Length: 296
Image 1 (tube, rainbow, N blue to C red):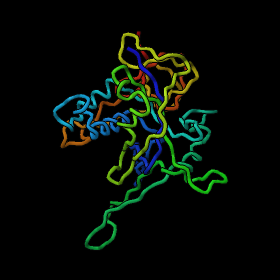
Image 2: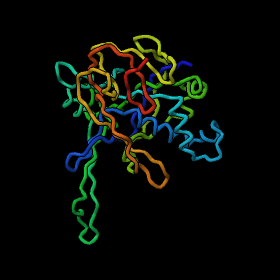
Image 3: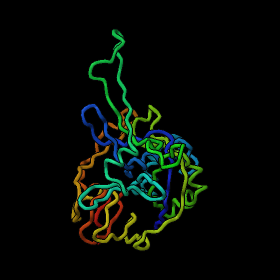
C-alpha cells in the first residue's frame, strides 16, 4: 500500500488559538497547527457529519473513538502553517535567528497575532473578580497589517500536507469528496468563544521534492530529508542530529466522555519545528503526528 500526499489550504473565519504555555496572565498560542490538533478536528467533523454510521457502519452516530482510530490509521497530517502569497510561513533559522517565512519573529507577531482579554465578574461588587483576569493570544483571522494599496484586510490562510492511504482515497481523495466531509473545521482551543473556525479553500495532489513517498514494511508515510533542511514538525531527538530548540511535548487525551482532556500523554523530548537537520535521515511520520528517524 502507498500514500498520496495532498496540499490543503483553509481560510480562518475566527481567531485561532493553539495552546502553548502561560506567561503571567497571558495564555500563549503556537504559531502553527500541530498534527495532533488536526487529527482531533477532523475526527470531530467526520463524527458530527455521520461518518461513523454511514461509512464505518457503527451503531452509534457519536462513536468518536471508532472514527478517531480510522483517521489515525488511514490519514496522516503534517503541521500546518500560515500562508501568505502562496508561501508557507514555517519556522526556520537564518543566521542564527528564528524566522517565519521572510519575517523575523517580531514582525510575524505584529502581522498575525492579537489577544482577547476576559475576566469573571464579582456579582456583589459588579467588578472584576480577583485573580480572574486572563488574556488569550491568538492568530488573527484577518491580517492586522493591510498590504500596500489594499483597503480591505486579507483573511489569514493556513495550510500544509495531508496524506491519504488507499482506504481513505475513495472517500477523501479529491476536493469535492474532501469538502463533502471537511469543508469546515474547528481547530484548537477556546471553542466556546467561537475560536478556530476554518473553511476549505484549496485541495490538490502534491509530491515531495525528494521523490515519491515510500511505505517499506510499515504503515506510515516515510521520506528522505537532506542535511541542512528544516524539520517542519516536532521530531524525536533519538538518533536525530539537529540544531534548534528542544521541547518536551505533552498532550491531553479524553478516555471517558465525562473527563474531557483529563489524561496527559507521556512526555516526548523533541526537536521543535524550525530546527535544522545536521545529517541526512529517512524520516517517518508517526501516528501521533511527530517525526522520528526510520529504523530499517
